[in-house]
Image 1 (tube, each protein chain N blue to C red):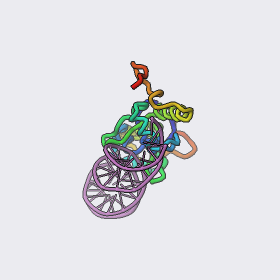
Image 2: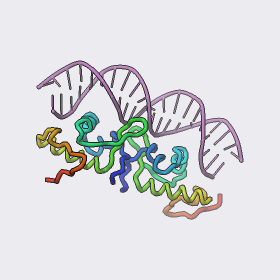
Image 3: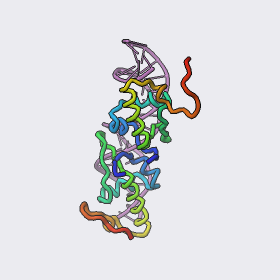
Image 4: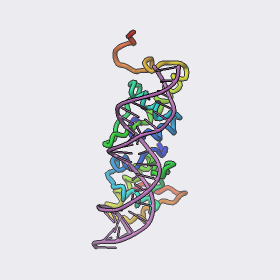
Length: 78
Length: 78
DNA sequence: CGTGTAAGGAATTCTGACACG
DNA sequence: CGTGTAAGGAATTCTGACACG
């Protein structure tokens, strides 16, 4: 289900990640939540699954820029 | 998906019902949202679909007590 | 009966920043 | 880099009640 309806608190509960981590991963363009009229992040179940993958990758020692899903470029040095 | 993760504001957007109506239907035992630690109602997509059916039935002139579902049986679709 | 609304409070989420390293 | 935290504000949701009919 790709409907963006889940607020960050529920995502925290479902993933075990902190809100800080979730927001940081958004900042680094690893996830793309929607926004409610009031500005609150809204996630889909797909986003939650994606975050679980990210969580595992981070535990494995990856860096956020290595997990970014870009359409074009490969990572470039500085 | 039967996971209770959607807050009432999103349900309002998805169904077009007012929060007052949604809460009233819960009061009359037509729906059974879960609660967050802070007391906020959490609905599933199934709840949302159910509410859409209720919405239609109410427009058709049914009363809430006629739409109440038992905890153990599932009402057949018409 | 079913729904609207104003009231006051509590829980949720937001952003930007400082900290550590 | 990735994450924790305190700060202040804004949006969200909650309950109980009064209203109409």
